[in-house]
Length: 126
Image (cartoon, rainbow, N blue to C red; front, side, top):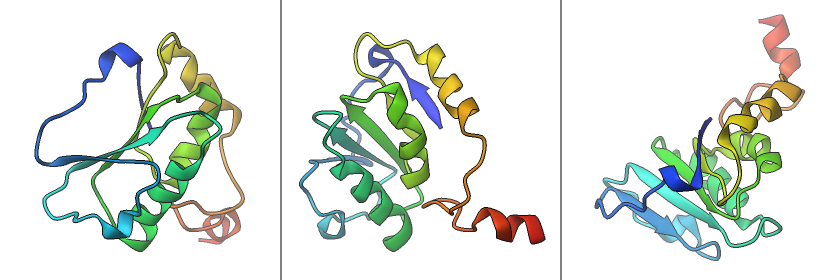
Protein backbone atom coordinates (compact mmCIF):
# COMPACT_ATOMS: atom_id res chain seq x y z
CA UNK A 1 0.00 0.00 0.00
CA UNK A 2 1.25 3.44 -0.89
CA UNK A 3 1.02 6.05 1.88
CA UNK A 4 0.77 9.76 1.09
CA UNK A 5 1.03 12.65 3.49
CA UNK A 6 -1.77 15.19 3.47
CA UNK A 7 0.39 17.66 1.53
CA UNK A 8 1.29 15.11 -1.17
CA UNK A 9 -2.33 14.57 -2.24
CA UNK A 10 -4.04 16.84 -4.72
CA UNK A 11 -7.62 16.16 -5.76
CA UNK A 12 -7.73 15.28 -9.45
CA UNK A 13 -9.90 16.85 -12.11
CA UNK A 14 -9.01 14.06 -14.55
CA UNK A 15 -12.07 12.38 -16.09
CA UNK A 16 -10.61 8.99 -15.14
CA UNK A 17 -10.84 9.84 -11.44
CA UNK A 18 -14.08 9.82 -9.49
CA UNK A 19 -14.80 10.59 -5.86
CA UNK A 20 -17.58 8.69 -4.14
CA UNK A 21 -19.37 10.05 -1.11
CA UNK A 22 -19.30 7.62 1.80
CA UNK A 23 -23.06 7.06 1.53
CA UNK A 24 -22.97 6.28 -2.22
CA UNK A 25 -23.53 2.76 -3.51
CA UNK A 26 -20.56 1.81 -5.73
CA UNK A 27 -22.81 -0.51 -7.73
CA UNK A 28 -24.64 2.58 -9.05
CA UNK A 29 -21.47 4.27 -10.33
CA UNK A 30 -20.39 3.97 -13.95
CA UNK A 31 -16.83 2.62 -13.89
CA UNK A 32 -16.18 2.85 -17.63
CA UNK A 33 -12.83 4.58 -18.15
CA UNK A 34 -12.26 5.11 -14.43
CA UNK A 35 -8.64 4.66 -13.34
CA UNK A 36 -8.91 5.88 -9.74
CA UNK A 37 -11.67 6.11 -7.16
CA UNK A 38 -11.29 8.32 -4.10
CA UNK A 39 -13.27 7.09 -1.10
CA UNK A 40 -13.73 9.51 1.78
CA UNK A 41 -13.58 8.92 5.54
CA UNK A 42 -15.33 11.98 7.07
CA UNK A 43 -14.40 10.70 10.56
CA UNK A 44 -12.12 7.81 11.48
CA UNK A 45 -15.10 6.14 13.19
CA UNK A 46 -17.13 6.06 9.95
CA UNK A 47 -16.18 2.82 8.18
CA UNK A 48 -18.53 2.85 5.21
CA UNK A 49 -15.62 3.39 2.80
CA UNK A 50 -14.24 -0.05 3.82
CA UNK A 51 -17.43 -1.64 2.51
CA UNK A 52 -17.29 0.45 -0.65
CA UNK A 53 -13.70 -0.64 -1.33
CA UNK A 54 -14.58 -4.29 -0.74
CA UNK A 55 -17.56 -4.06 -3.12
CA UNK A 56 -15.44 -2.39 -5.78
CA UNK A 57 -12.69 -5.04 -5.60
CA UNK A 58 -14.57 -8.28 -5.02
CA UNK A 59 -18.01 -7.84 -6.51
CA UNK A 60 -17.40 -5.29 -9.24
CA UNK A 61 -13.87 -6.43 -10.15
CA UNK A 62 -12.43 -2.90 -10.20
CA UNK A 63 -8.71 -3.12 -11.05
CA UNK A 64 -7.80 0.57 -10.82
CA UNK A 65 -6.53 2.54 -7.85
CA UNK A 66 -8.72 2.97 -4.77
CA UNK A 67 -7.56 5.87 -2.61
CA UNK A 68 -8.58 6.59 1.01
CA UNK A 69 -8.96 10.28 1.85
CA UNK A 70 -10.24 12.26 4.81
CA UNK A 71 -9.71 11.40 8.47
CA UNK A 72 -7.26 8.57 7.78
CA UNK A 73 -5.17 7.40 10.74
CA UNK A 74 -2.12 5.14 10.74
CA UNK A 75 -3.86 2.40 12.76
CA UNK A 76 -6.47 2.03 9.96
CA UNK A 77 -3.96 1.26 7.20
CA UNK A 78 -3.78 -2.52 7.57
CA UNK A 79 -7.58 -2.82 7.43
CA UNK A 80 -7.65 -0.54 4.42
CA UNK A 81 -5.13 -2.68 2.56
CA UNK A 82 -7.11 -5.83 3.37
CA UNK A 83 -10.38 -4.37 2.07
CA UNK A 84 -8.93 -3.22 -1.26
CA UNK A 85 -7.37 0.22 -0.90
CA UNK A 86 -4.12 0.85 -2.82
CA UNK A 87 -3.30 4.33 -1.54
CA UNK A 88 -4.06 6.13 1.71
CA UNK A 89 -3.76 9.86 2.27
CA UNK A 90 -3.05 10.45 5.96
CA UNK A 91 -4.91 13.24 7.70
CA UNK A 92 -3.05 16.48 8.17
CA UNK A 93 -0.31 16.39 10.78
CA UNK A 94 0.50 12.66 10.62
CA UNK A 95 3.94 11.40 9.60
CA UNK A 96 3.80 9.04 6.63
CA UNK A 97 7.20 7.55 7.50
CA UNK A 98 5.73 6.02 10.70
CA UNK A 99 3.13 4.11 8.70
CA UNK A 100 5.38 1.19 7.68
CA UNK A 101 5.69 0.09 11.31
CA UNK A 102 1.97 -0.71 11.29
CA UNK A 103 2.45 -3.19 8.43
CA UNK A 104 5.51 -4.71 10.11
CA UNK A 105 3.40 -5.54 13.19
CA UNK A 106 1.04 -7.73 11.14
CA UNK A 107 3.07 -9.70 8.58
CA UNK A 108 0.35 -12.30 7.85
CA UNK A 109 -3.33 -13.06 8.40
CA UNK A 110 -5.14 -16.34 8.66
CA UNK A 111 -8.13 -15.15 6.61
CA UNK A 112 -8.09 -14.08 2.98
CA UNK A 113 -8.67 -10.45 2.04
CA UNK A 114 -10.41 -8.53 -0.73
CA UNK A 115 -7.22 -8.63 -2.80
CA UNK A 116 -5.68 -11.97 -1.78
CA UNK A 117 -8.64 -14.30 -1.24
CA UNK A 118 -6.68 -17.43 -0.31
CA UNK A 119 -6.50 -18.15 3.43
CA UNK A 120 -3.07 -18.71 5.00
CA UNK A 121 -3.51 -22.50 5.34
CA UNK A 122 -4.20 -22.80 1.60
CA UNK A 123 -1.00 -20.92 0.78
CA UNK A 124 0.99 -23.20 3.08
CA UNK A 125 -0.18 -26.34 1.29
CA UNK A 126 0.40 -24.94 -2.20
